[in-house]
Length: 531
Image (tube, rainbow, N blue to C red; front, side):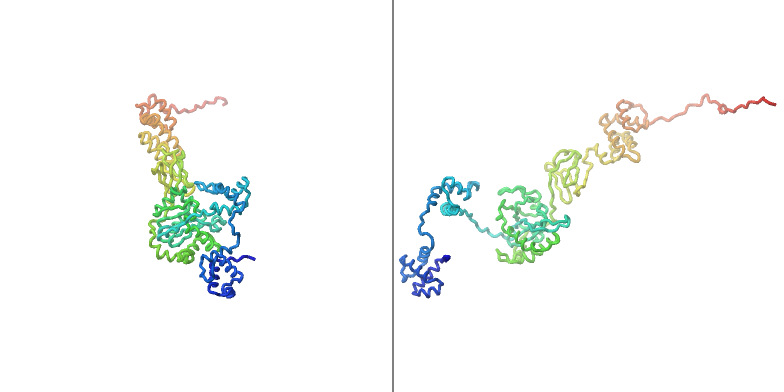
C-alpha cells in the first residue's frame, strides 16, 4: 500500500480541532483522515511535550510532520558514504570546471576513476553523495528580466525551415524557408518565404518587412548568418560588406546575437515553430508565390489579432497604437543589393564577374581589382580608386571599351580602317596617303595587319624616313608594306626623287619611211608552157 504523505497544514488542522475538543470521529469526517492517523498525530505531539489545552502552532505541526515522515531517523553515513568522504576533495576537483569553462568530468567517468582506487560505488549512491556534499547539479546561472524595449527600438530576425514546396522552374519540390521579422515591443511580425538563405534573400525579406510595417526600427538583432556576418565575435564582429552598406542605407544598427546563444533573440526564436505549425503545415501549396501571399494575410488576420501569451495583448493593435508612429520612415528607392568580388585582369584586358566579361585599362593587366556590381552598373576599383564603369551585362555577356587597349592595338581590335588611316596621317601626309590606298577596296580589314606594320615602321625607322619611303613608293604606285620596308632598309628614299612619275614625251619622227614601203603586192609570173 502506498504511503500518503500529508503536509504541515493538514497536521496543523487536525491539532487545532483536537485543541477545540472535537472528537476523533468528527475530525475524521471533516478532514478525511483515518482515526489511526489522527491518533498518530496526537501521540507524536504529546511526545513533543504538547498539551491539547495549548494552542498549536506551525512549528509544532512541522516537528510532528518531521517525526512521522518515513525513512531512517539517523543521519549516520553508510560505509560507502564514509569511503566517499575520504575522496571528497578529489571528487570536487574532478567535477569542477576549468577557467575556460571546460575540464569537468561526468559522473560516469568519476565512478570509473573511483573504482580504480578501490572504491566501488553505484551510480545512484555517487549521485546522491555529489548532490549533498559536492554541490553537484546546482550550478544554475542567475537570470534577470530585461527591461522592455521602447516602441520602434528593436526588431529580431531569424530564418527557419517550413517544408517542401513545388518549384515550377526546376520542376521539383524544394525546401521553403521563412525569414521572420518580429518587432520586440508589439510582437507584431512579418514572414518572408524563400528557397535559400543567401544575402539577397535576407535583404529582400527585410525590405519587404519594412514596407509591411511602414518603417524600420533603430536596431536589428539577427543570428550570425554567413550572409550578414563575416566573422562572428562576442565583442568585435565583422559584418558582410553588402549588408553593412544596406544597414547604412536604411539607417539601422546591426546587433548580432552571441554565437550559439539562442537567448540573444528570444522573441523571434519561438516564432519559427509557431509559424511552421500554425500557418504552414497541413496546407496545400501551389508554389512559393502562393505561400508568400497567404503568409502576408496570415500575419494580419491571425498572428496579428491573437492574444499574445506573454504580453496578453493583440500584437496588431499594440503596433498600430504605440509602435508604428515611432518607426524610421522609409526614404528613397528599394535597396539594390550589390555584389562584391576580387577579380584578376587577364592578358586580354578583361575580367570575369558574375559570368560576364568587362574590359579594364591596359595598365592594370595582371593585377587584382575590386569589383562592385548591381542591377545597373559594374564598377572596378584598384586600391580604393575607381578605374572603370560599365553597364551591367547578363550572364554570358561581354562589353569592351576599345580605349582600354593600347593605342596601336585598338584599331585592329575594333577592325576600324578609318582609325588606322587617322593614325597614319598623324605621322605624315604621304604616310596617310599610303595607308588610304592600302586600305581601299571592298575588304579593307583584310589588310589591317599590313597597316599595323606600317605604323610600327615609324617607330623603327623614324617618321622622316618613312615619309620619304612612302613618297618613293607612291611615285611608282608600289602599295606593299613589305616592299616599303625594303626601301627603308636599303635607304633608297633619296631627297631628289620626284613625287610622281614624269609624263612620257615621244621623240621626233626622224628617218620615217613612206607608207607605201610597207605595202607589198605579189608579182604574177607568166606561164610560157603550152600554146
